[in-house]
Length: 65
Image 1 (cartoon, one colour):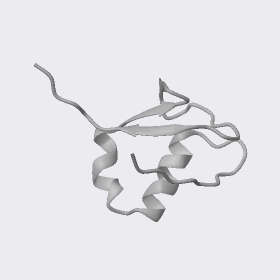
Image 2 (spheres, rainbow, N blue to C red; image 1 turned 60 degrees about the horizontal axis):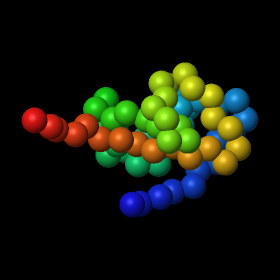
Image 3 (cartoon, rainbow, N blue to C red; image 1 turned 45 degrees about the vertical axis):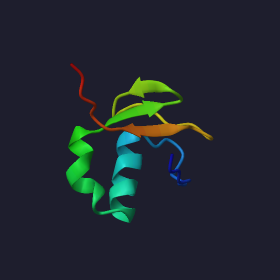
Image 4 (cartoon, rainbow, N blue to C red; image 1 turned 135 degrees about the vertical axis):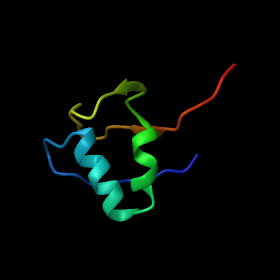
């Protein structure tokens, strides 16, 4: 599991974090539409507010059958 620590301004949301990630890792721009986000181990939408020490996970699509 890879990890990265980012500092975002107070009041930031998952969407703000997503934008910061793309700014640092341009290759993510094409992958982001397929990813889900989790905030502190629960799925979260783009408008979910972040808090100090938040754990955010990027979850790729998975197949099943």
